[in-house]
Image (cartoon, rainbow, N blue to C red; front, side, top):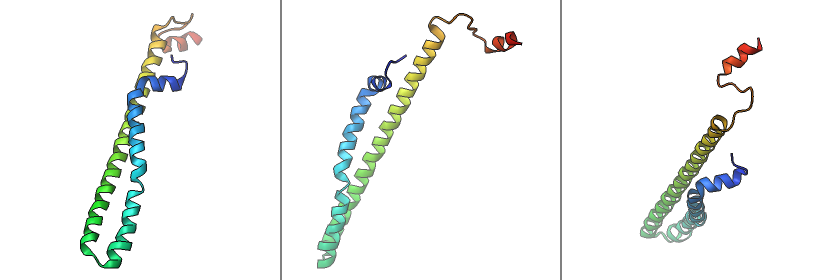
Length: 119
């Protein structure tokens, strides 16, 4: 059994944790890009009546949104992978400790035997 849950999580999923941090750091600056593109669409393209600039900025806006959402999706997948991986390893560790470590005196393998003996 692990002595510290945090150390155990890092030990079992360090690589995935690093990937999650990198994805998070990539998402943060992308959050402001769509807002700036919206501002530029209104201030520059619509005010001047420049349709070509509006189409270009709209295309960049679409790319920025798709990229940000794709990175968020990837980050959520990595977080889910970390959760599943650590949960599986922890369950395996508990199972190993319960069924292979020296059993306490009076511990029966079959739970029904304990119920029958108590009656």
